[in-house]
Length: 234
Picture 1 (cartoon, helix red, strand yellow):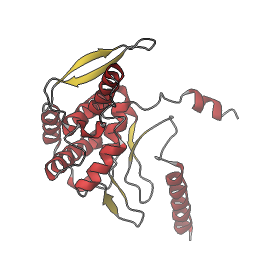
Picture 2 (tube, helix red, strand yellow):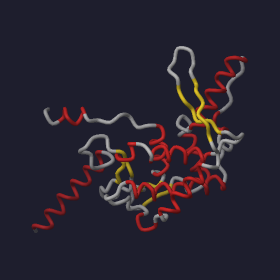
Picture 3 (cartoon, one colour):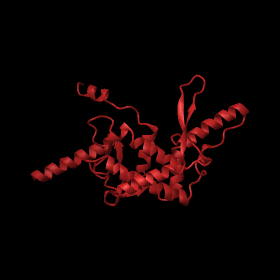
Picture 4 (cartoon, rainbow, N blue to C red):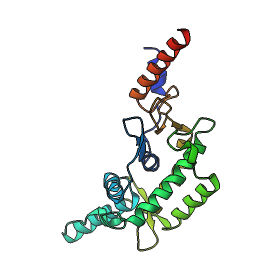
């Protein structure tokens, strides 16, 4: 009982939107359950599915949805689908290439962020050079410059949205903005690579004693250590 209290008292705040987007983009490279690694963004269909699963987090879709809802309330019309807010409802090959290149930069910068710890073994031997990763991230963010816009509905707290200055919302730019915000935030210090057997995930530590991304990884790591100790004494 005494050991539980301090851990709970040091639990961090819930993960931010920017951190969630940055992590989830990196985690499209994952363990396939059979000892290998799989890529959730292997084709345009994978990117389309990923975007649709993150509509609530992507800033331009969230802002567009709020604007559509307000306009719909004022005019009595139904709000438009938010899926079209970033380059259409279906990803194409150009979008896929841009997002995959951004992900490569993100994973290289994640590897830097977890130092002196080891990076994810999924791509540790083929990481993008750091200067190139920084340049690529900044160039991706510059594809759609944004400005802060205050939204303060009646009876609610004020919220700041980042709104594109141009007419086109760009998925890669929106993701790059989130990654930059995450890497420049205190949450970056919580980033770790999970080194349980077969795991290739990055995660944010939720308490000081956390070593693995999820309990199942902790169980595999303890079993592996147990077997290793028995082999050493055999």
